Image 1 (tube, rainbow, N blue to C red):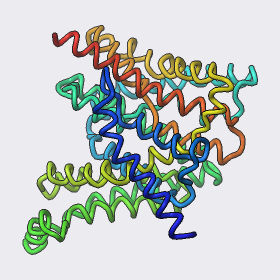
Image 2 (image 1 turned 120 degrees about the horizontal axis):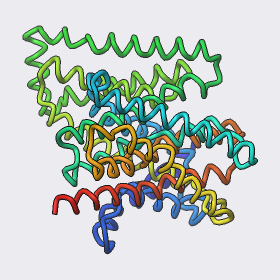
Image 3 (image 1 turned 135 degrees about the horizontal axis):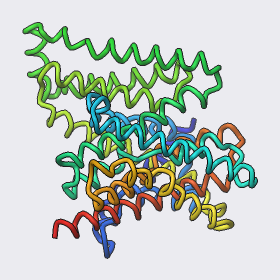
Length: 388
């Protein structure tokens, strides 16, 4: 790899990432999520438009960005909620979405509209919890019972598809993949028990003293945990997203057991993730987006955009009918229908398999971008109207 060319690509990507907050601030109207501008910037500098950068030299950094995105999503997830009523409702909603997705993709396959029906069907059941959290947090929508329902619905909409990706969308046999998922899960449980070592007074002192110093003890161990589980998941032939989510869940357990200052660690993870690696993932994803394929058949994009709402969103109206008032159920409908990171990962799998049609790759990603741009704004608008 030519170091000069790699640095040239990195400069272009870093410039897009740095300009994105400024663009969001100066654009008129409702504030657009930064992820949309990052993707648009990636399209602009990518090989399909200006050709200022290439993704080949940025792939590792992009994968780390994807890992950080799902590490933060896993960190926000409280596994105990999955066994309580919010978790049961979220699982029921996802299962209904999965059944609808099977019927929809079967019809699209029979019509010759799609070929790689498993990634497409699975993509329609995902929710972009990691992308939604900053938007919902900024609008005070994560408190109380409604916030718990959002967390669990989003977590299930990420975790369940990730497990299915790891088991069924792998080059290995399904039984081998299932065993691999179990082994990675066991490793995560073992890692969760490690904080017993911090009962030592000396270790606790080292952690406290290094937490805010140049040693940055907790942040460095969080990075080690992320890289370790990403490596293990990749080694077992699993999707690295699974390792990232497990890393986030393990890290949450660590912070509880050693009773550390979680707000400090969260700020550091946000700074490293959203400040450096996560923008690289979204920008490189935009660089891979073929606008020509979208422009040749825009109807595909609109169909997938509507299907995201029908398949993933509408079941919320039924599932939460006894738990939430109608307005919040409508908000939940648009929140759960918002997707992007996992959708990008699934289209990448389909593209690598060589089965997914290029037009569907571009249309699905475009539909995901449109969902991030439109659906949260509708949910936030409903919330603000009710508050007023």
